[in-house]
Amino acid sequence: MDYGFDQTGTLVLAFSNGERMEAAQLALGMVSNPDGLDVVGDGYYMSTVASGDLRIGRAGSEVPGGIVAGALEGSNVDLAEEFTDMIVAQRGYQASARIVTTSDELLQETVSLKR
Image (cartoon, rainbow, N blue to C red; front, side, top):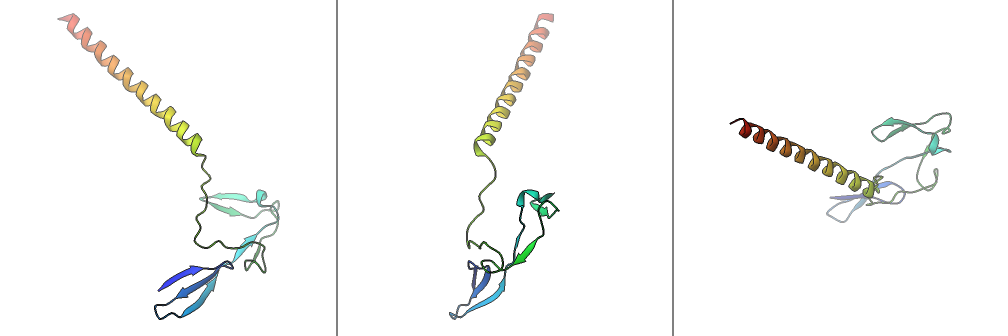
């Protein structure tokens, strides 16, 4: 059995005998001002007075918009910034490691002077 969603959000089941069946349909929600949504956490949002009332319906007919089947959502991470932060952290680690090495060498030199 295979399955997938079409542009209207309908779950389509495809069986090995060639038969296809529509099983369910996703609902889309829409608010008049998405910037007014309240961030609850972990990718969840809650409607507020500023966002307007939540309208729920079928894609394309009751609510504008649609479903893109088989697509992945783009990342909201700025890769250039993340790589820059990683390089800065790596350089900081390298500097700390050199300080430890230099301190160890100074201590060894101090011990050898005492002898």
